[in-house]
Amino acid sequence: MGYDIPGKYNKGPVSELQWKILIHVCKTKDADFKSVCKETGRNRTTIIQSIEPMIRRRLIKKIRVDPLLIKSRVIFEPTYKGKSDAEAFGLNVKDIFRTEKDPDILGYLQIVDQLSNIFQRKVMLRELAFNILDQLIIDDQGNIKTKDKISAIKEAFFDSVTSLIQDNNISSLFNDKTIQWITSFFSANEVEELRKKVLKMNKNIDLTLRILSKLESKWTY
Image 1 (cartoon, rainbow, N blue to C red):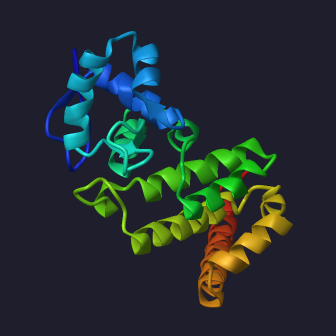
Image 2 (image 1 turned 45 degrees about the vertical axis):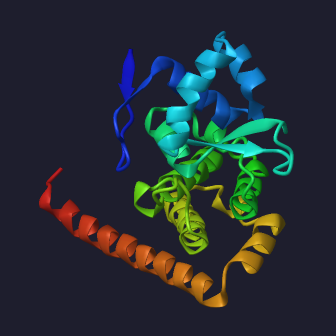
């Protein structure tokens, strides 16, 4: 059975085994042939036959732990193209980023992890996935340029704040750890940009309330 992976770089269906491999590589730190064989119940030869096309299609990448040793242990990591396809297929966002190693993305995830409000965490993870796994910023190698990555993380936070603006507990998002991250990751101009966005939202809310108040006179009770 094959599955059509959505996305700009799709070149055909993946098999059920390849989908299982992609899920395992996304969720497992330093996944290797041994862990993939154990997870799928297939032998090494079958795994090699399935995994090589995935590497060519830039869904996953093969890394030698010690590049100088020919027989060094080989581990597999998902590319951002692979993560994007896994997310489009319905893999839980938290699982997609479970093995993340990029320090900038990890910084965002640490802010999410320290929140006790489950709804806030879901929103922030949703916005991160939407922005960082956008196929439009993923290159032909399945990677993301640093500039695009930074912009995507910042946009994810901005979108999270504007989505949560009516949450009664939004003040809990701006705790000491989050404030420290904001001041180190964002510029003063970017924070001002966010303030203006929120201010504009507030004006739109006030305008809507005035319109609704006028509409109330249209009904007679």
